[in-house]
Length: 346
Image 1: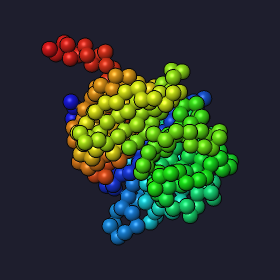
Image 2: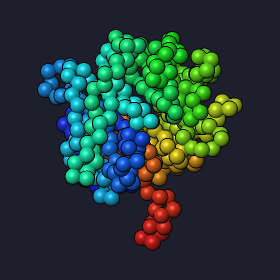
Image 3: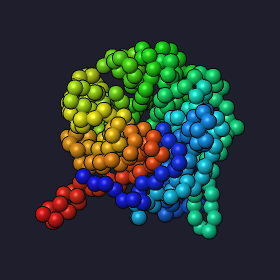
Image 4: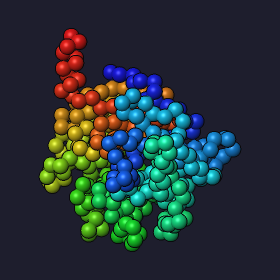
């Protein structure tokens, strides 16, 4: 169990609802040595449209892996007026960020900032208007597929939409079967989309635009194995559980109770080896995806419930965000190295 370094956790003055890492594709690799560029995270949050005095904004913060520290102030900030930025999805090809607002979704583009041989990132409003997502109400889930050519959005009204990107040609637009769609994820090959909300989860065949199977939060494994695995969180009498499903036979492979508190955030690492969950008590747990054994626990990582979790592109770090206005980066220790350190300490 760890509590984390103080510099790895920063408060930014606004309740945070979304968090993601900037992909390396943002940088021009022909002119910049990306191995020397700091990691950047984008955070979304604010006080809403009330008179709280808390601004609504997208924040960009820098992360230095050597010192395990987040910048104490955002390196860039883009206000969104009276509209609360709720969920965000970063395009894997580095094109930009889509953000859900109370009544619509808006597209933002990355902007490189270079000064004194330092390379930073910011976001700017885009001239690209997502007409298909204007006046559609609050969208609770946003995700791109691995190749970045499909975008799925799930609404508070239960509507599920899939668009071809960047043309925004509609591939699916129908009621999901949930009273509201709370989480979405594409399979690594882009053939399936899983949606969860109220009632049973659903698996959608993207090509046929049909619901194939009816089964918390959901994520497909990102590993390179031919066998695709789906992880789903579920709340039972004893607390939060993780279920592991085979996506060929749609049979349950395993089920494990992992925490006594309700799970409010969940993600899978890009290499498919790790799972991360956040609880309403502000705790973070990192587990092995194979054994579903807990490897790291950060107690009270946040003072409020965890609203978002995202692994870095290389699976070596985890960003978490909370309603308490804090963002934290937890470094992933190599399990073999960690076991050796534990043995030496003993």
